[in-house]
Picture: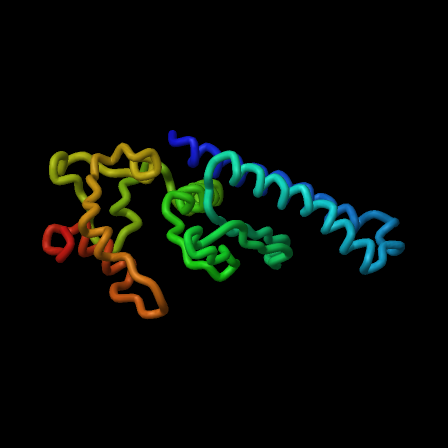
Length: 198
């Protein structure tokens, strides 16, 4: 694993830990009898005291690893409670990295996909070892092993044998509101023999 990836993972872990502390303190303030004594100012100071070390930690880790810019957010109870950009979107031109900077989410989406998948497994909505064609509106097979089923476990652990075509991926990237091709349509065109991206 690249050093930058290790540092990025460490930053995410640290943000998660601090988020948990923030959530715990928010939960305690709801149930604790002291909550009535907390003024708006003392709540703001509590938030500041929890988040100030986070700013320092992120800046320190960015300096250590050479990360040029990043954005981070904390959501509590489906509400955005903190969001901030750090560093530069363009170091040469000194363009700050803001909360509105567009960035390719890349492999960090795997973390969210994994959590969503395991939540669906936990709730009995899907099975890791069921053929994926049970869940898909189109059929997907591995052309090299057409008689072997592909499961969610295979997909989640990169053991399905399906190959990536980066030339197709590169052409599919876009920015802005207009989506040239719906994700479901893209996947069907990518994984079915008659699809335009197959």
